[in-house]
Length: 146
Image 1 (cartoon, rainbow, N blue to C red):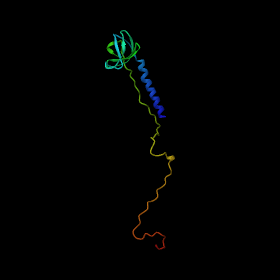
Image 2 (cartoon, rainbow, N blue to C red; image 1 turned 45 degrees about the vertical axis):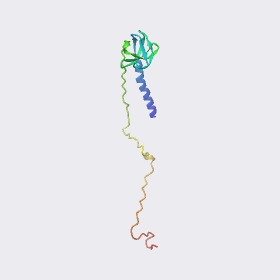
Image 3 (cartoon, rainbow, N blue to C red; image 1 turned 120 degrees about the vertical axis):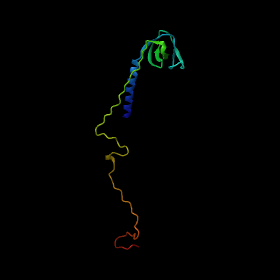
Image 4 (cartoon, rainbow, N blue to C red; image 1 turned 90 degrees about the horizontal axis):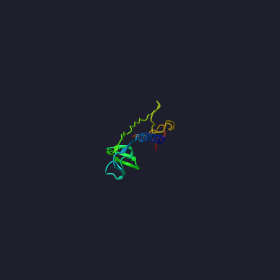
C-alpha cells in the first residue's frame, strides 16, 4: 500500500516538474555559425554546427551555456550566439504531504502483539528457597526423618 502511494507521488511530482519545463522552453535564433556541444563548455565533444539564422528551442541555460534543440541537433551552445532567448526556469513549489490521523491514533507497538492476540497473564512459580540450617527433613508432621 505504501509503495503505491510512493509511486503515485513520484508520478505526480514528475508531471509537475517536467510539463512546465517543456512548456517554458523559449524560441531563439543563432546569430552566427556556432558549434553545438555535448555539454556546457568547450571541453565537451562537438556534436555539430548551426549556421546563422537557424531557429532553435532553448530548453535551459546555465553559466552562459544554453541547452538547445533545433536544426536536427540537440546539445549546448554558447549563450553569446543566441538572440531572442529569455529563458527563466520554472518555479516548482511542492507542498508537504498532509497527514490526517484520527484523534485516537497511537503508533503501533512493534515489539509486542495486540492485546487480543496475547496469552492470558499467568503468575510465575515461586523460586525455591535454600534449605535452612538445622533440620532439613520434610516428610510430614509427626513422622521422624530417617
